[in-house]
Image (cartoon, rainbow, N blue to C red):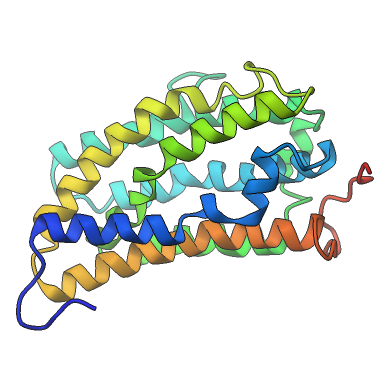
Amino acid sequence: MIGESRPLSPDELEAALRQIGAERYHSHHPFHKLLHGGKLTRAQVQAWALNRFYYQSRIPAKDAFLLARLPTPELRRAWRTRIVDHDGDAPGTGGIARWMKLVAGIGLDPDYVVSTRGLLPGTRFAVDAYVHFVRDRPVLEGIASSLTEMFSPGIIAERVAGMLANYSFITKETLAYFTPRLTQAPRDVEFALAYVREHADTSERQEAVLAALRFKCDVLWAQLDALHFAYVDPGLIPPGAFRPELEK
């Protein structure tokens, strides 16, 4: 808890933000350890890719809500690159298009994935909660919630190396989504972290940005909880969700 006597310095605030990631980022989740370690079946990897698509597809909507509330052209120019990163600037470009290559590469019907008919309720609730958070909360908190990207290069490197080493049906082309993120995420963090360090200048605002980052970590964790419960243990798939014939 931040003391009431004085706000944290910018360096102390950044350290507190990074500590949240060290403790709560979803790289620690059992499902991710199974995914990276080659312990999942092809069908379970398909369930992950299908559900993760919904998160990827809603990120541009989240960013558009925040973009609309930024007060200056300079801030809007900085933030709109995130939308281009995901949506692309032409058909077949951008992160969402690359994610569709992933789902097709592991044997899913792209039209079925885009329809979200097979989505887990827990995934939908978690992702929608994140979009609504950024839409409804102050801009500072919305920007702070994006700072999970501080921790993403490590998990991306682990994911790519682990999946290439452990799954015969995964190729470098299948995982092409992740390569640009190794440079995009640090760029985005540089802007968002500088903004938070400058504008979270009271104890109250600092508490708010720390809570925003904890919330975003919870959103990511909840998605993996839903996957683990449905497709690993105890394996209770909700009505209407993707139902693979799990390989043994």
